[in-house]
Image (cartoon, rainbow, N blue to C red; front, side, top):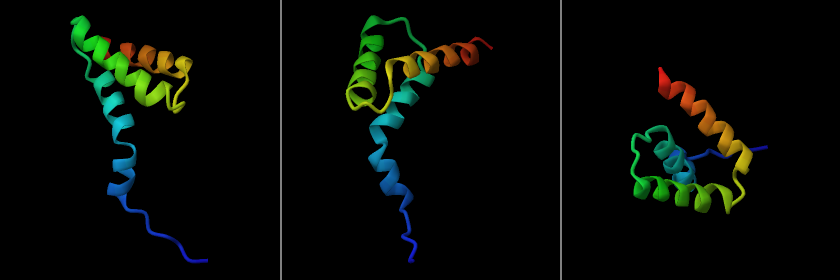
Length: 71
């Protein structure tokens, strides 16, 4: 059986929207409703509508982020 090489850049391109959405969550530092709405739309479009994540897993992630951001 021949192993197929996986190109890292191809994988990153496939997961670009997913990565950017989580990056926005981790870097969230605003109280602006406009910015928060943009992040919500990104979560809805790229994570929930595509069924990559469940609503409960998003809530768990945000809860974990709060603990790291408080430090």
